[in-house]
Image (cartoon, rainbow, N blue to C red; front, side, top):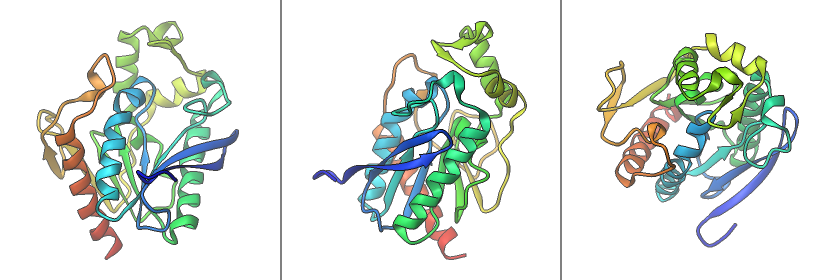
Length: 224
């Protein structure tokens, strides 16, 4: 771990070794971030890292998992299945539980909320959750119909499951959306829809709002 509290932890995913980025102490109360999917993952990574740093400053250990076919995975994205991704989130949660001494809170962004249901957790926090059909429409507008979305190939298995996927409402669950989002939510917060932008970016205001609400929700779930 470096001076900023940044470390990388390996774990066994569905198709071999994967990695998690950790900010904060491994033994601290844990928050496991489940990333958005495809290009939205890259567009929001800096935001997630900023929220993780803000939470680490509040005494949390924050983890961000890779999925098969992403990050440092040696599996090609077109070989990864929907089952692989759900398994990877569950395997990551198990390692976090072992390291921290307790089940984590899952914090999922966008499509990450479609694959977080099988993992053991004290609760779930989701930012702007979306159903799979909505993501498919976005992909088709960006050329997904030809087999790739913005240069990201996906297997027929992932495409098939994604089309019908919906976030599973598994309690305790808290839904947070941007103030500009008309969807139902437990809380609306100010900030830009970074997943809609053409380039990766971050927002200090949004990261701080996320961290504050995640910390409060963790306390609620841990005390229930």
